[in-house]
Amino acid sequence: MVNWLSGEHCESSALVNMLRPRGIDISEPLVFGLGRGLSFLYWHSKQMPAPFLGGRVKPDHLIRNATRALAVELRESETTSQAKAERELLAALETGEVVGLKLDRFHLDYAEDSYHFAAHYLACIGYASDTYSVVETRGLGVRTTSRESLARARAAKGPMSSRSLAFRLGDSDFDPADLPAACREAVAATAHDFLNPPITNMGHKGFQKAAQAVRGWCDTLDDPAAAFTFLSHSIEDGGTGGGFFRTLWADFLDEAAELAVEPAYAAAADTYRGLSARWTRIAHLLRDESDPAALRKAADAVAATLTDLGQAERDAMTKLADMP
Image 1: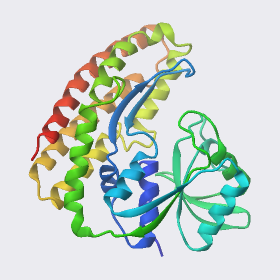
Image 2: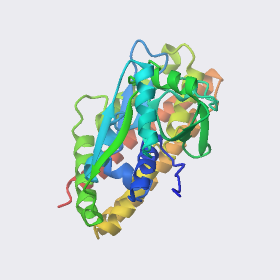
Image 3: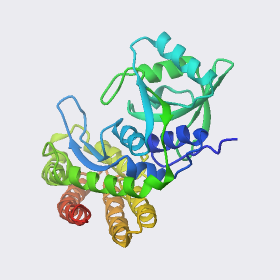
């Protein structure tokens, strides 16, 4: 019987649950690290009611990077037809496969989410009596939801959405002996991408952009208190593992230090645990404030912390990038 993981982050824990039935039993932090999961993004378009801070790579890239690092074939399918999406899902489940699904959990029967987020992932493990069984993240575990609700969730539109995107695993050349080299490659690639972002909203450059913007949020946002609370949730509680994914990355570095026999990774893990604690403090500053004066004070404190964090994270990634 498979020991299903209700992990910290949806995309990494979904992949763990897809791998386990195939005899590849690795930790969620290792999947997150091999997926080159750590990043930073500040984004606020005219269509968005509030700004967005992201602490991880773009949706879908983590699972793609991790399966490539593990030498496991990844098969993706998308369709605008809900009927076709369900037929393909049922066919895979009937063969005993675990299927990774991208969707908006808001629509699922058991969800208590008050907001829409179309880049949530879970592992679908079975079907019976017009209901699907899925494995969720920590606090939810294995749940069931109706076929109608799952179809709505998979077809949901919005930022970062896909067209009933499903992930399946194919052939595998996984060899545990290759993990040390895979860890080194993932660390180097993550550091390079963080230090060389394609746009100024991402990587270390995004910190300064966010710090400049946050001071004006109290004047430009329709509901700054609600926006601050949402950002606090997305930093600390929204499937990040705490500390804006920095704790997951630190756990990966500790595991990579043992696999690759590299003490410098363990030292970097300590650094990132300290950075994680600073992100947690930002989340607390943003949480549950409604008084205008308190909101401005919180915004100023967050802006100053973001400026300092940007330099600290750049320094930490530079050390990792400079490793032989």
